[in-house]
Image (cartoon, rainbow, N blue to C red; front, side):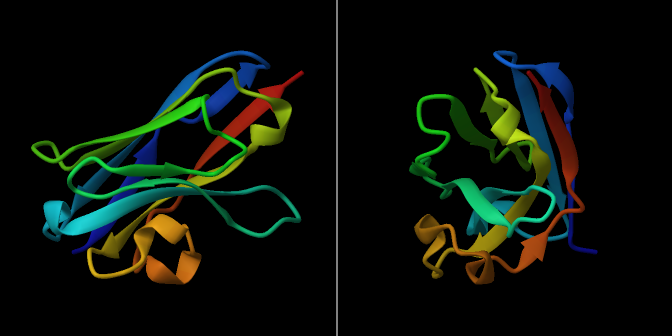
Length: 125
């Protein structure tokens, strides 16, 4: 069974940090590019960051310099280190997987086939 399971969300004050994790199972993790997306209430889901299996990464302008995406292929786990959090970072965060031949770096939702259930991040001012 193909599955992505996010964890690590929570409530923090502005300026705080959180580290999200995404555990993958049921498919060849190293063959897929991985991304983090988020969706705030009343807004469309948007791409936050993504990485291929060689370690190349791309970030949305809104999180550059604050968020870091990384992956551990041996542990089939994706991470998102989030520093200097802002209230506008409040959203449900999802991890997703895209086949390597897709344009994963464009952070478009339809490039990603496999999705987790999400973990909530709330940042208070």
